[in-house]
Length: 447
Image 1: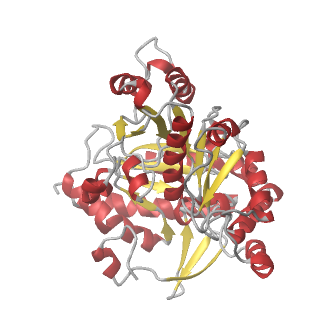
Image 2: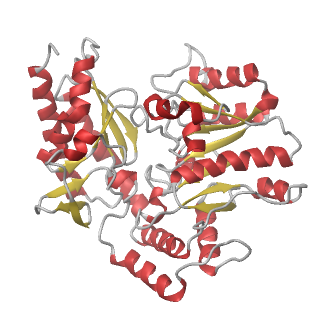
Image 3: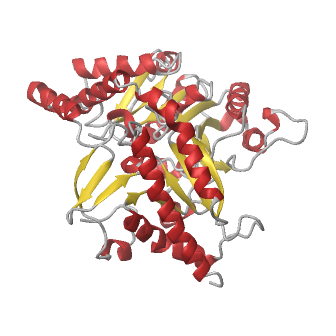
């Protein structure tokens, strides 16, 4: 089996866990060792593992109608899922285009924005703006929007030259006396739109909380200012919610958390709690209506498995379970305990600069010394992210994410159903990871 985003050295490591089963917030390997799933698989196993209700939903749909495409026909479960998702989306986002992954969702959003501008009589609009170290997927169109250099570099000759990048909001603040519109991250987007020519810019892509760089929460008012800039120049605002959609921040969508209505939302991951691949693009009927009423007459895009009946059924069951089990309420009830626990861990060592995030989505930024502001050396960074942190996590029995996209960090994002006792257990194991990391940094202070 060829690995995903894993070095050959790590894949060949004999300590690499081979997982066999999962239950609740735990997964187990072939040696019977249990690990706390502190990353929800990859920000997506929101309801935990081993859920009989989601299995039953898939089985029932398979027995009734396992598959039919939505090319020239519809099916009942796809229509029901579209209605269920749009009813929970920010007001005005009342249309949905289904795909099978986050990368496909982003690629579809790029094409949908372009199609809208064509239909609206503005064929010059094709450029996309994204933020430094933002991650939006790996298919060539989505990778063009992604701004993580090492993911892009091998494929640069093949990527579309339609994307421009601006700084993200890490440590962004307005000048003294300034408001949200004066934030450097917002001003950079407006400056770029003007420099490129507003008549050439199609869309701005941004995650409500940016993953690359370590759970970067924007300053207060950022999203409202960004919405105003996009409206001013006729640019579509796209919220990439592949991570923040379906409860990660304690709301159905992260856009709701920040009080803004984008023109499009991309989603995947938590839409089925990762039990089957599923994703999509939410948008406004005014956008789809413009396309339908134009000479184009259609969105010339699609995939075999879009709105797959089994995935649709599991998504319906996921949303039903989230409401019956008050999953959003659980996130809001316990997010303070999660943040407080991580801050306590950070305060106990000089090697954590800060804890960033909200809801059930956090990152601890690693430095050589917090008090002096000394950054990790190249050797320390390579050692930690090249295996030390992963081995520490296996030793402590917790699966988190050592992240090297921008500042080195440890990302923590547990299942949304994690209860108080389980949260304490995860924090204890995370503290063990940080202690192992701290010992290694002391031993390698001159590296």
